[in-house]
Length: 109
Image (cartoon, rainbow, N blue to C red; front, side, top):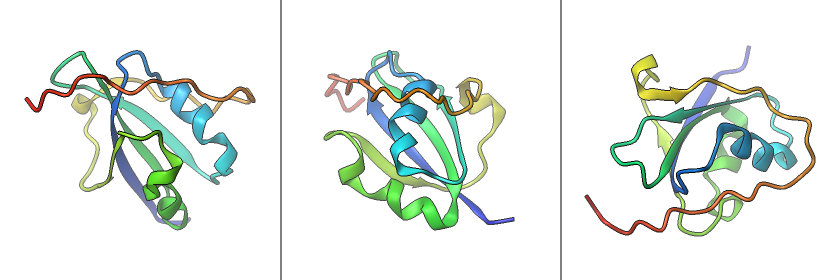
């Protein structure tokens, strides 16, 4: 079984869902994808933990994949249940593109 790696994705609009992320990533044809919405300190943005096979990690760390203004970083450590706010939703077979918005909050709190 291939080794898995994860990224931290943040600064998305608060209405962004796990389904939005999985649909957005569908064109990359990742062999494995698991996405969790994370609890955030403020309700003005959304953050996600995205788990993929190690050989697909480079694609997700490529800033050109994501909308401008997103924060993308490798996720280190183990994801704890108390860090998640939304259960995993399997990848959808929908072919529509995602329309998730970036957070407009510029506070550095």
